[in-house]
Amino acid sequence: MLADLLYAIWPYQIFKSVFFRGGVAFLTTYWVIVALMPSVIRYFRAQGITSDFKRPEPGGKPYAGGKPIMGGGLLILAILVSMVLWMEMNQFIVALLLIMVAFGVIGALDDLQKVVHRRRVERGEAEKKSYTDKADGISGTVRLGLEFLVASVVVIGLYRFVQIDGHLVVPMIPLKWWYPYLPRYVFVPFMIVIIVAGANAVNLTDGMDSLATVPILTCTLFVAAVAYVGSDPELYLRLRLPPLPANLKELVVLGSAITSASLAFLRYNAPPAMITLGDLGALALGSVISAMFIFAKAELFLPLVGGVFVLTTLSTIIQRLFFKYMLRRKGRPAAEKRRFFYRAPYHHHLQALWTYSEQERAVQSVWVQWLRKLGIRPPGVDDQLLRAGDVDSRVVWRLHMMSIWLLVLALVVYFKVR
Image (cartoon, rainbow, N blue to C red; front, side, top):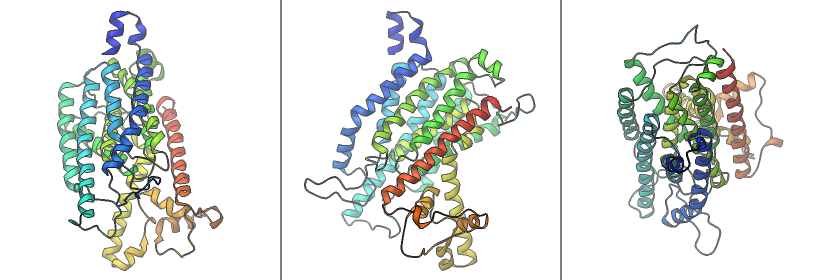
């Protein structure tokens, strides 16, 4: 709206440029979050908007209660403000808006249920499970059912009203060799699975301070670059890339807003985090980024550039399957002592590796044993750390660096390796 108003008053082409609108969308998103987030954090702390069973100490002491959740709600609000002010509301942007808001609502329901459950435990109306340190949300089955329902409705609507091509770009394969086409009855379920899986992968990764923020940023930068080049006839012909609709270039502006939201959130989410995305932010951002990859015909590159999300999800699945296997074959005592990873997801396994303890480990890791056989040894005592905060920082930044080099690798493969 604001871009159109400026162009109507001063008909200069700069107000139509995706780079100008992307830049001001970046600034708008950033300063909305920076201006409002401190007040949101104070309010959420006062109202107990958290899933942690951890009470703040009374008196004028530093806050030591549970970290507030649902911080992603402000990110979504800031992105929506930038979308309304600076983006052309074509069919792609409207579809992405619907996906982001719908998954955000599902995440908000889950977060609110966690807050309600924690309060019921504190009042003595419910019991806290011995093996968990956080309150429960809605059941996983109900949440997945809602996600698949919303994704199905949106994707079927997309296929009817939005120009979506069923061709897939296969990494490292020239288009003239193989450019497979998925018919509607295959491509629609494929899109639904990608959106739901991407949303939940981001949600799993959000379990550690700032861990999900940088992979969100790198995935957004990649898909924005692909959308810009693919929607420019001169560039996609020169680089022999699949052509994309011209109005898909608006993903550059949306990508700029999401990138800005990630950077602004790092001010408050870097270890030790003052607030977390919560299911609201994680599901909303994960779903919209996954849909952006689908629109840009880069679905098969999402596991590469989003390698941290894949690692988090696969490690959780492997850990659960291995535990069930050991439980069935060896019994519960053996299953609890011998795990595939020390803990899951994988970032919690790294926490266990880097944390110094004078006591011998009660759990054995099959993964560590395999690595030893290959000559790869875990960190020694002189490389381990005593403080949990130092351990978290080391793990997070190792995985952040992984996200950055995966971004570079994905850009090289997509644009040059054919």
